[in-house]
Length: 81
Image 1 (cartoon, rainbow, N blue to C red):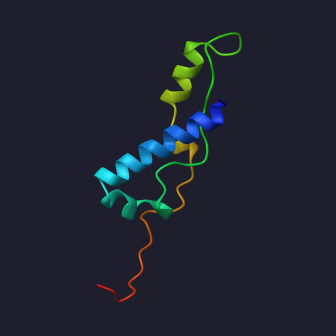
Image 2 (cartoon, helix red, strand yellow):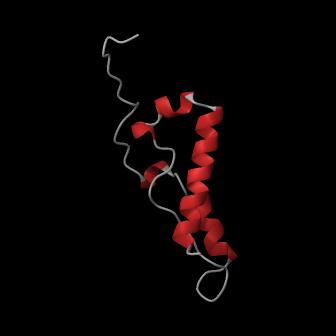
């Protein structure tokens, strides 16, 4: 099984479970998606060691590296109750 296929399965299963148990979350997410299309996969071996992977995970989500493009999810009032 490819890494891409494995990641896709993991993302799908976790998103379904989270939305099933916490349906309100989908309403506050931009576009209703839990996961982005990207992922990081590497092995501890010749090209990357434990420290490389640890640093990658530690530095995820640092605001200085990302440009904030919106403050809150857009909402529309369609007049439906």
